[in-house]
Every structure is written in C-alpha cells, then in structure tokens.
Length: 494
Image 1 (cartoon, rainbow, N blue to C red):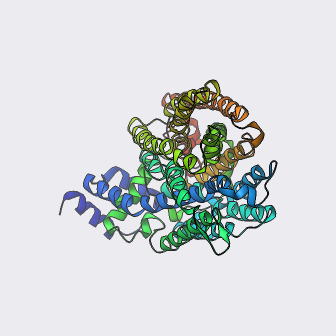
Image 2: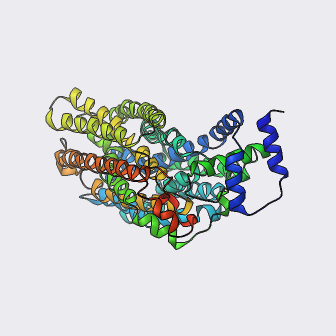
Image 3: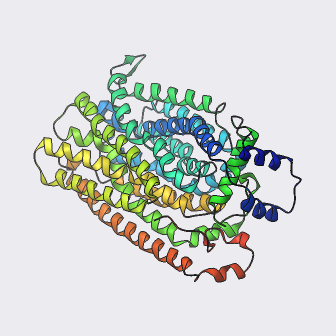
C-alpha cells in the first residue's frame, strides 16, 4: 500500500470532529494521491460524460428538427402562412425560460440522476407527439410542452458537472457534451433526409421525423434512469478512498468559497440567491450569451432554409447542412481542450465571434453560392464554441453550489430571451437573401465581443484587488461561510 493510500485509510477510521476544524486540519495534512486523482477523473469521464452527451444530442435534435420538417412539407400540410412558423419556434422558449432558475434549485433535492433522465424522457414523448399534430394550434401546444420539458436542462447539466470536476477541468467536459449540438445538426440532417421519405398509415414525410427521433430520445431517457449517479458520494463505481479524494479535491478547489466538503451537505438560503444576482459576472455572462444566442439559434433553426435560399432542393439542402455542423463539432472539442489548458474563456469566445462575423459578411456581401456556403462554415465554427465557453465561464466564477445554480439558471433564462429575436429575423418574405437575419446576427456578435471584453477587464481588475489585499476586510465582516466567491482567496477565471 502506498503512503497516499495509507493516509486515505487513516482518514476512513478517524472519529468525526468539528467540521470546519476537521477540514482545515485535513487540508494541511493530506495531499491527494496523484494516481487516485487521475483514476477518479477517468471514472467520471466514463460514467458521466457519455450520458450528458447523449442527453444534449437528443435535446438539440428534438428542438431543431422542426427546421428539417419545415422544408419537407410541414408548412404546406399545417397551412403555416405568414409568421405562423416563426411563432411556433418562439413559444418553445416561453416555458423554457420561466423554469430555468427554479429547476436549478431543485436538481440536487430531486437528485440529478433522476431529474435529468426524467426531463429527457418527458420531452422524448412530447417530441413523438409532434408528429400527430394536424393544426397550427396543436403545433403550438406541443411546442409549449416541449419547452417546459427541456427547461432547466442545460443549467442542471452544468450544476451537475460542477459537483464532480474542478473549475479548470470543467470547460473540457462541457465541450465534450456540448459538441453534440453541432453534431445534432449534421446527424439530424442526415436522419431527416431518410425519415422524410416514409409514407405509411396516413402520415407522410415530415411526421416520421418526429416519430422516430422522439422514440429514440424516450428510450435513451429511460436507460439514463439506471446509469446516472447523483453525486460523488453516491457513485457506486468509486471505491471508498476514491470518494474521499473526489470530495476533498472539490473542497480544495473552492479556495475558501465553501466550508462544506460534501455537496449533499449544502443547504439552500436566500443569501446565496442575492449573491448570485448581485455578482457583476452574472450579468456580463448573461448578456454576452444573449447576444451570441441570436446568431446561434437562428443558425441552428434556419440553416436548411438559408441553404434552400441558395437554390438547393429539399434533400440537397438537408445534406448540405452536414459539413458546417461537423466543422463546428470539431472546433468545440478543440477550443474546449485549449480553454482548460490556458485557463481562459473570454479570449477564445471573442476570437470565435470575429470568425462568425466574417461568415455573416460573406453571406451578405457575396452573390456566389460557393462563397456564401463557405460563410456558413465560419458562422458555425464561430458561434458554437462560444456557448460552452460562456456558461463554463460563469460556472467557474460563482460559488458555492446554490450561488452557481441560481446564477446559471438566471444566465440561461436571460440568454434564451434571444429566441424572441432569433425566431423572427429569417422571414419567408426575405428569401432568398435573408438580409435582415444576417444583419441582425452580425450586429449581435459585435455587442457580444464588447460585453466579453468588459467581463475580461472586470475579472482582471477584481483579481488584482484580491492579490494586493484590498478585499481582506471581508474576512472580518462575518463568518467566512457566507463569503462564497467573494472570499479574498478566490480568483476569477478570465
């Protein structure tokens, strides 16, 4: 047995003492064994990330497959003239936004290993029912229910990951599941091409996109009930010594932001809610993501429409959505890995926004289909990596659990208000050039870059204040327990 393992065995045999005293003494006497630390990471990567990847893949497929159905007869069959199609896109986000914050509060109480699978199963069933709709009203109701089922999902996934990984391990893991978003555009386009050919039982073409994809999602959700763990302390795939290491390293990574080692012991208090809402980083990240989601949502929903505007027919347009989404999939993985290595989020997000701006300029300025199609690649590789960056950025800079849960829920709620804009900027009457949609998206990216740069400047300034001791007075204002990310030892990620 190694010396590190002997330390862990001693740890298991110690009687409980004053919790804060125990943690402080242990921090100075116990060094996390490197090999066990790496083993814990590998086990988490094997037992957690694949299920989050699947959840996010099916979430994006079921959210955006209405764009595929649109060019395969949905508009004509349900008589969605005027702005009716845009309205069906919009209503999804109303319940989606309203449940974000409260959903993040309950994810730990309900247990994440039950809550997240419950959401995916519910929306899988709802997505399946979309294929049965025969009217505009029915489509609206189904989309409202779908938004309610998907609400709180992304925030819950981020909060869930933060229970297992250190702050500067998070972005890579967020990237590992978020890359499913652009992949869903590629996979969904290929799948829709085949499913839209089915004509059976009075349901022809587009309904089968919803039927088959919804059933697959539902089955996956049911499987997740039996495979997803709740917290490190509940992880059956960890040994007792690995559980201790998993919990200890999270305590050390908090840098004074919490004095509770086990996430199960943290308790809700309105103090944490106020702290999250008053944090400048919450507002900077929320606004930056809002501006980014305008082009991202419009791109994911209308890419088949944009490509159709270049003169390609239904099947060709579906297939042409695949390459730019594959490129985005690769870039999300690359930038997420790089971000954790350099421990920076904002600079990568800013560079991506510049690339996306170049893509929209190509779409606006050129009349060549080759150049315009090339612009869709730049948009994809520019906007998709930004979402995991900004949500991971805020997760890194809020602590402890309920501050993070509140802040991320608020961020997602505010950012998703972008859907009210994104759903209406690509109008049928603007075909085939869609100048309005491209212009609004371009302007949004300019505002996104400005907000990101302001956030970077704020984080650097605040870190400098803490380094020179200007925030040490907080230690004498009351219990350190209530400081969270305001603790002088806590440093913001840039």
